[in-house]
Amino acid sequence: MANQNSAAYDFARFEPKRREEAAQSQQKNNVIQLPQEKIDKNARPRFQPARVILMLAVLSVTLATVGSLVFGQVQLTELTDAINTAETQLAESQSVYTQLQMKSDAILNAASIEEYASQSLGMREVESSQVEYFSVSQGDEGVVLQESGPEGILDQIWNWFSQLLN
Image (cartoon, rainbow, N blue to C red):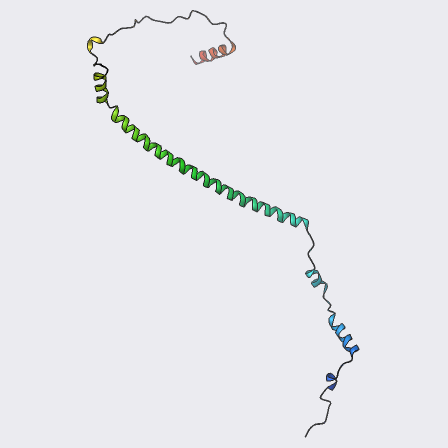
């Protein structure tokens, strides 16, 4: 029943290999040939100074922009605080001014001033006998006693323009 034909089986695969053959087969399998495209693709990139300088310039501009924005916001905050402080002081000063104005109005009203003048200083109201009128004569005029020197060039030009307008 058993088929004694060994042609179907390769028993050489199961036999121990010789060391020389094993060493040759391993060396042949370890060497991998890569195409030149893959070697160029995986190669270390070259140092490009123009690209580095460009990146540094972009980084510098970005940092300068961000720094100026932050600096501007800090100044804006400080100025806003200063304005708020000044407005608070102004409101307080206006309140004090209003209080002092009301006090002075209460102290210096017309009735109290008149009472103080009549009682403390002995003053009285003006009577018609105390009023004196005087008049100024109609013939007064001014006369220039000293004449100016000869006319300068600017005076002559001015006189010429004034004669044109007349």
